[in-house]
Length: 285
Image 1 (cartoon, one colour):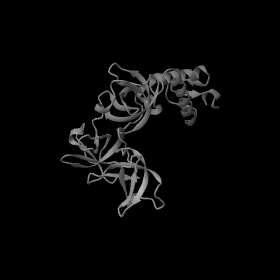
Image 2 (cartoon, rainbow, N blue to C red):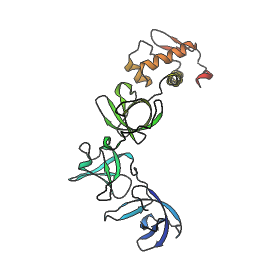
Image 3 (spheres, rainbow, N blue to C red):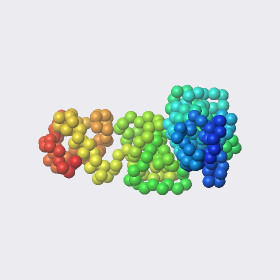
Image 4 (tube, rainbow, N blue to C red):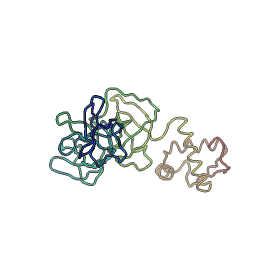
């Protein structure tokens, strides 16, 4: 069966003036245009191709890899806005249409949006949508607290940044727990902090619990070494100053300097913190 929107493994069947026809196991045919045909391709060879519909609404094969596959999400740039929707650059010659009905907000040319790729049942065409929330799983959540997950930032809100979790679920990063710049479309990693009753999940960019402190102890020690063994921060410093210089919360910072202090690696003064032993402790490597 020929499947639009994903990579298909097909076999070269016959050559024509327009290109090479490929077949699947059921002998369904699709054209690979000449511009995508490798010089060393021989009939009978198997090759991986992406299938979509061309401007004449015919299924077509290409060896180009699009930025997004069927059922997935990607940050794409809007190339043109027209009366019936907006066209996005997605790595293929024919741009991806996001109709007006599938726009969460008004699309502006040149801006980047997170787009979901789906197959429209009526037209049997690949179409994009920026209405991300409606595409995410709400009924069953197959993640656990503490689990590391892949994230795509797709929307800012008053309390934080909404993210796609492992390509399936909706999560949120709260503003007061973000200590690094995050733009819409950024792909980052995080950890499941809490699964809420509505099956949305709270996300932390850092590990939490003992392992989180352990990782941040190493991070703090490395920054101290880079800065000559001293920093003008201590447990009285403002959370904003700590976040700006270290990218961590004040709570984690205080636990980290406390751990180094107990190990006799650090002294805390009224003006900051200083390493006592600048030779890296094996436990911190």
